[in-house]
Amino acid sequence: MVQITKMSTNKIRHAYSYLLICSFLLFLFTTPLTEVSAKPAKTSKAIRKATPVEVADEALWHMNYPKADSIYTSELRNNPGNADLNWKMARLQVSLGEAVPPGNKDARIQHYHKAAEYARTCITLDSLNSNGHTWLAASLGLMADKTGTKEKLKRAKEVKHELDTALRLNPNDETALSILGSYYREAAKIGWFKRMIGNAFLGEVPKGDYTLSEKAFRKAISIDSRIIRNYHELALICIDTGNKEEAIALMKTAVEKPILFETDKIRIEEMRALLKKLCKE
Image (cartoon, rainbow, N blue to C red; front, side, top):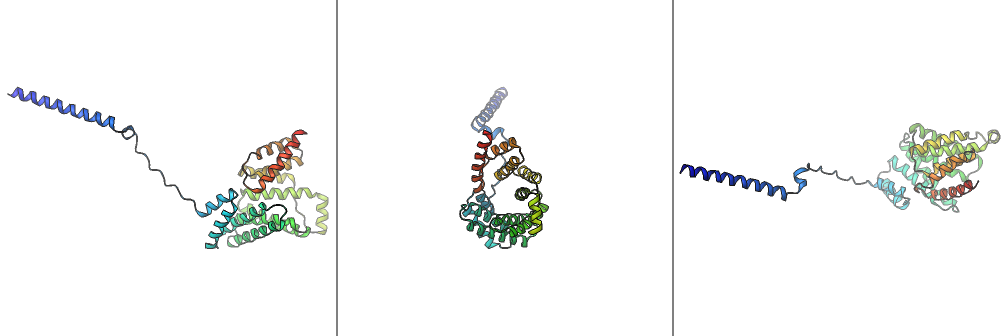
């Protein structure tokens, strides 16, 4: 009787073990592999929603100026004391002015005047905001085309002062460096004799040379390699100084860059024409 009981107990144990093994195998083959072997997946971070100003910035870089204008204006209405919004509006007005067809200079000048007003407001709110000084220099420089010689020289002095201030506050301001490069390039064209005559009859004439201009443009390119303007202007300096090979290389690089401003389209046309001419020589 005892022997029979032992045999029954052994059978039960074997049966129980068999059931456990079957249950484990059933679990193994019916549970997804990732649940068995993979570590628990980390929860993905929530995607941050862009702020209205960031949306406007993106619109500006895509040349959707009406959208950028609408958002900036709305934000500025709610927060008129925001210095950054004021320089961004100055930048937008410069972009709008540059987008006006060449035949309508009056409309361009109106945008540049508005840009100067926003930039000055930015500086009033925060004199240490380098962007305010940069975009004031940009708007003043662009307005100078419609003025007489004396007024142009006066504005040139103010432009240089604003650029020096901007770069003192932010030495890596690509826009300020680009404008400074153009300032030195234009000054280099004046020549020593014209400068002497100008100093005698009109007041101080801007000083600069191609070396200073080239240095400014090269640094601007090193900071932001997307801007077509810097390649074009530097290529023109290379042409003026007899460095044809580098001018060709710079323009070939530039025409492959994305168009970020309306004026980029004109610059690309000019560079393609120059490339065609230089490559034939």
